[in-house]
Length: 170
Image 1: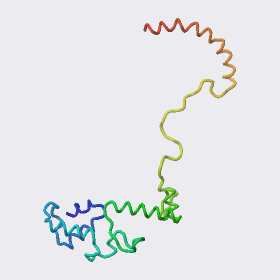
Image 2: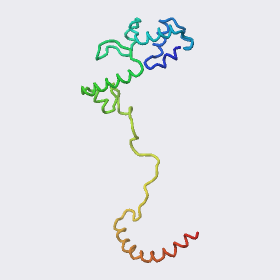
Image 3: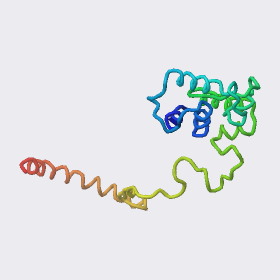
């Protein structure tokens, strides 16, 4: 029972145990053995824990900014409310909003060594070395080799037709 209830987003182990203790249901029983009355009682308690005299510190959204009420959020309401809170901080240009915009830590942690995201900083490991270009370091050597290459080009062109058929036969 306890593990089955914790599969609902917004219900933790302690909350599930408190629900089962309040309703006097055996936490070691299977969910398939619940009666319809038990299921409805669990649903009612999950949707409105304040009516069942759960303390305010047990809820996951105390003193909501918009309503001022103590709430307990479930399922898709949790990320939706979180996005709204972050967007409100960005719009009001608070320090936390700036930290969220920059993708940095928000709650005062140090960032010198931890909290690094993204690619590695420094020298990349592995990979292949850059190919070596002909002529290497000196451009003048390449310029001097250009007239010699131009003179050798007609001779090379004469040799290539004879070499080409030999390559095709093999």
